[in-house]
Length: 472
Image (tube, rainbow, N blue to C red; front, side, top):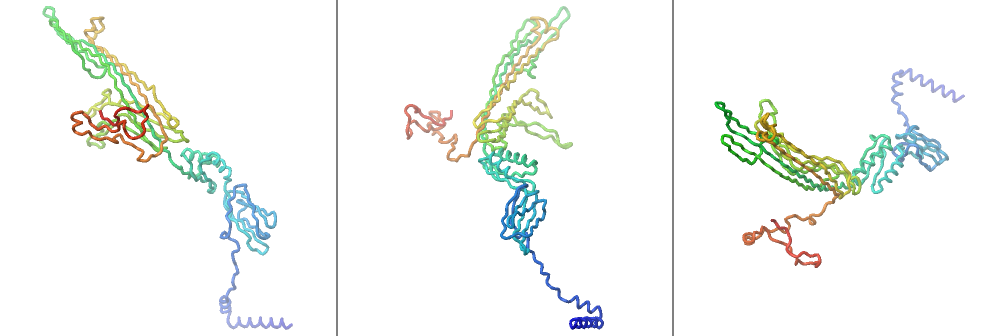
């Protein structure tokens, strides 16, 4: 009864205060009253979580320090947690992505937190790459729904092969990042021999007549000049003239046989996968049309000679894929043109292009590049040149036969860099001959090195006499 009376008295006092102060002042006082502390605190976060990578369909077993009362899985579509006992849980990867899993005890305290990253199962890919490249160091890492290859291999072909395998296992090569580094890019030295032989046979025979014939008051003057046009222009010939009264006959004849030999032996070195080129020849100018209206014509240059371009790729130890293109060109008056008063010669070209696989030190021969060309032309006086025997006096015969054979031998080597002390030059040991020796004996340089040099000498295989760099 006393408690109720005290409660009624407190209520009456509050009502009186509201009536005296007014509702506005009472509301302001209530708003100014201090709020109690919220008491909110974070008991589970990523800051104290352990990172656990998982493959799709893979799991890990976790031992907890105390009994588990509650489990929180942020995204069950990514990972799941299964509790078998009070202190043992299984974390299972469900789909590719990231999520969190937290374990709590009966008092709500965090027992453990895990930051789960579920990626592709890469163990099978790692085992396959390790089996295929036992000498390499290829590492596989997951990136979202793709993979990244890192590490080192011996050749670019191995790096490409690892990328192709990873793309096949992933199912989409665009999801594979190739970060493999080639340990040492091999250098390839290419020794090339280009040999060409051109044989030509030219025969010319013709008779020119000049004279006067008349019967009574009728006089006929005749003059025949039979040209040699098979080669586009008259060739030099031997003339034999004969005069019979008023008729002059000139016999023009020539027989020529010639051989032209072209030989080039370039040696080039390039890094595996890079291009290298070589040219032994020259350039000839030719006019070009003006670029702008009213402008003057310019001059450009065209290469000719023996050229070589090759691209080597080391496939494996001692195995080389080689793309080689060689060309032999020479100036030719045939099919020449005249531009702006300048005669531009034509080019006779022999070209070979091939891609092969060779062992280091093996040779490739490009042979059978044979060309034979025969030209024969007869010029004479119409009607009379068909007359047997006598028709020879009124015609000329021009015969040209040309045979060309080209052969290319290519030998690639896998080479390593050498020290300068292990190299020698053609002029090592060369010394100019003194004036008395040059004037009296006609020598251009001194002889160095004799059979009596210091060191052991095999009497059965020793050379008797002077040797060295001698310029003839």
